[in-house]
Image 1 (tube, rainbow, N blue to C red):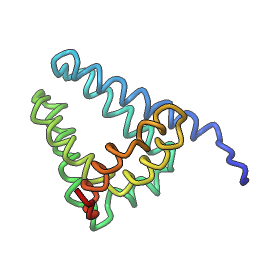
Image 2: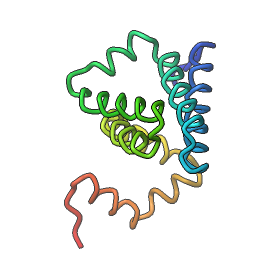
Image 3: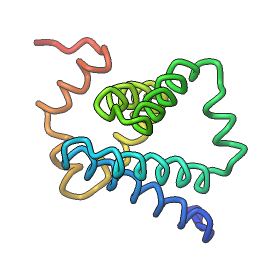
Image 4: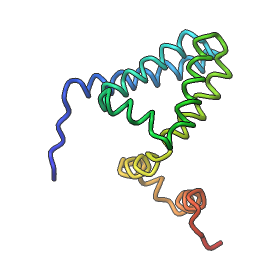
Length: 140
């Protein structure tokens, strides 16, 4: 098995990304508090930049197939900062889904390897729902 080493910069980046998600969650729970949402966005973006590097982050956001997600996420971030957090979060959510939709299969494989959660995700009912979502033909 290959060794996976993580440098200090990546550890800090993952921590910032986690705190960004946590502050965004708190901002939504506290009725779209724009301060928490803005802090969550800043921490999330800086965490991603530290985790994969600034150059890779910029390349990811300016890929032609990611323009729609980048523009939506950017406008959502702008609306959160300006003071329209509900509209901003709707746009950001759409942008996040479009930007990171290519990572969902990797996340699904990772989640299936978690002991208890993996057992639930391997259940035939859940698998048939996921196959329908992916567009595979499932006999009924």
